[in-house]
Image (cartoon, rainbow, N blue to C red):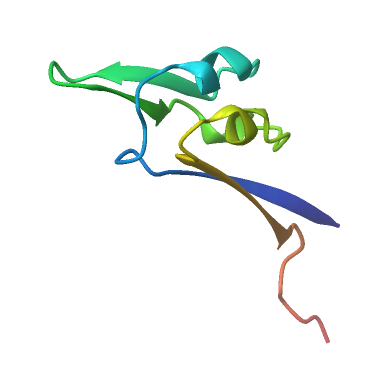
Length: 80
């Protein structure tokens, strides 16, 4: 059985802190962080991501990239 692992890659240097990605993510994967000098997006829990790409598509500066990788859920052991 194969599962898809979803990775959320952030380019915080591109983030303008608008928060559109956070408001479009219904799974609570993303949050805005304010370090006192600027606001930017951060990942709360990548395992919640559905991989629908709403956050990636709404970002005006393309600061988010969603990648779907195939992973194997079975062991790689060979039984003789």
